[in-house]
Length: 121
Length: 163
Length: 349
Image 1 (cartoon, rainbow over the protein chains, first blue to last red):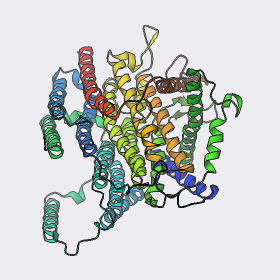
Image 2 (image 1 turned 120 degrees about the vertical axis):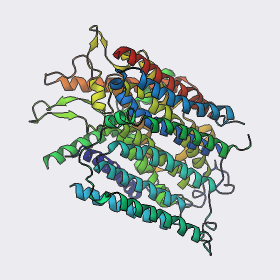
Image 3 (image 1 turned 90 degrees about the vertical axis):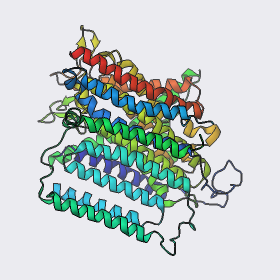
Image 4 (image 1 turned 60 degrees about the vertical axis):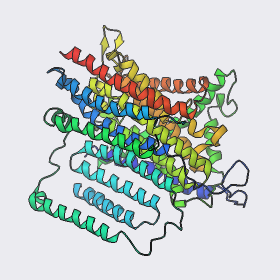
């Protein structure tokens, strides 16, 4: 049998456990909603406005940079797996990755110098 | 057995993709797309490309879709703004782009006999990918770093134009 | 058919073990922190309070199942389920011990691992990457300010540290030449000069640096002290799960602890030789028990470090946290990769 089947089974067990839990707590727990209890929690003070607020663009920049550097990391894994084999025939395979990382690192330095990594302006 | 799994994954992928388009709430659309990516990853596994499947989840579902969610949350369209516009202004443009893509697809199918190609005969290991990538395809690999560099600079310029 | 049965049993056993790890970890954490602060910690429920977490779990089950009217219901229910599922998924590829026939109970020996995939480590990274969804969806669907802010912080933090988390394992991949966790563990068998174990921490001069990087990122990834910003209670109440109650809250709580155990188990597998240790494996009928014992002992030691950190270090400020992740850990992991690469090419040439 395919070695992937257990992964699927594990996923189903996890999902099943979650669903059963939610259904169970639906039946086991009491439910006494009141107007005050139903308010969004803001430390006991009447909520001001709603939660659909706009937030800092920095979260967006960080996620975007994460994607780009994550793509770089994706190329590093196959390189790491074959490194020992290819390293026997010299430093070429090392230079390959060194050059690749150097180009990416130039981008990283640019990001740093531009201040995109600074949380406070 | 494989056929059953193929049908499950393929139908999920198509269903999720269609549901994505018809969802009114952008967060639901986003989640449908994540589901579609999962089904695609399943198909990649069936085709004997587990590495691509993992990358599909890590990069697309785990990173890019999180960015999409962030953008949706950042824009935070309220229910009124989400109403469908009366006159779809971009319709001609959308039809043109869609038609172009369809044409391209048709050309690819005409040139390459994709339908008769065998798939999933044996599993391609990460090792094989690595050996190919770092010997035969070394230039595309190095060039991809320049592409990522351009994207990094673009990302910073977009968000921090003032500096 | 019998094959499917074995798979189902294995999955259930591993799942239950991961879940039972949670009450143990909660008790362990409370006790250790208490003793470090010259307190006793829980004492009344069971001997030395071991049953306290079970009592808490039963209490949570009968708590009001609160549903905020402003919440987006489907996503609100989906988020804890997703969080829980992605947390346990990592355990499906970790080898817990050598092969066993359970003292002659089975004809064919089975490996103490749910499944050995060629890309095992990438499966773990996929699960980690998907773990973000539980949090970000919980924050968004609660439709309340504190959960939203907590979720945003969490996501940005996890994204930043996930990068270095992935890169810190690359040195191991270079040494082992494989992504399969089984092969990674087996590459760490044996001893140097008869007394130093061939764990990856000792196999290269950069091994320990990689291990430290991995563990720091792991602590941040699980949102634990000193990186527990997302639920900094003085600023954000309870962070992304402020509006959750009863078992839905319990699932986020369990997911956090399962994740801690998972990070420790992965660190053990990658850097500390997995189940290898004195007397583990071999041809004896009880060798697998010793292997499993080594594995559990190593995981508990790492969990102790988790608790120790929590009892010792004050929480970072958010800008410090982001600066540490991007300006220190990321370049440091790149340097570690290149240093390991140079060392390996010296060894093989």
